[in-house]
Image 1: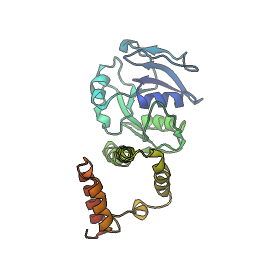
Image 2: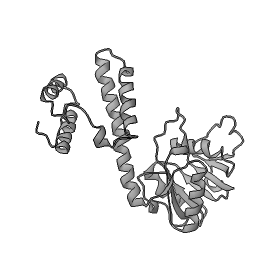
Image 3: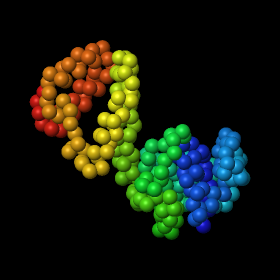
Image 4: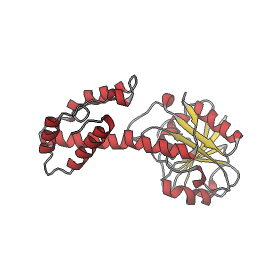
Length: 254
């Protein structure tokens, strides 16, 4: 049984908490958070504290707080030589205080509090300073996911960068598409089948194979029409940038 304490209770830790609590191989001993948390059934019996001096002994301490607070918070912990990990994609392992044994437990997924996720296929990226701790994190990861992979801080930083492009930036493009439709009184639902098919194609095709559209096929008339429709729009430069990038990728002059 792996004994776990959660330090912080944001999006990532709340999802990990809900999932790990279902495992018969994991025991959640406590949740620390600076603000009071009210747990719903069946979690109401799990101990909570807002006192950093009352954090109990555990096998793994999972920090889930903003990246810029990880270093100072980990240094403020009252105990030493325990396995302390964080869940950030972008922060290096050595961001954690060296007074404890350091590690990473990073689930590569987008999390929203109002939406449940299935951890079974979510990559759990792990890293640790010594083999025993790495084995503990691998075992912990396998209790919830079939995809646990050891990745260094340097490679994880690039992985996180790639994730920002395919997730955060793409979602912003959904927002832009929604705004364009809203100006004409059209529902965003019209785009959902297209979005679903675009995402589904990546399961069997490479991004290069799946790429379509006027920029790839050098459809100048359509591009000019789109730019005319975007006149005075804050998204004109974004359209031009994407078009230029695709032109460079596929080698057609516009």
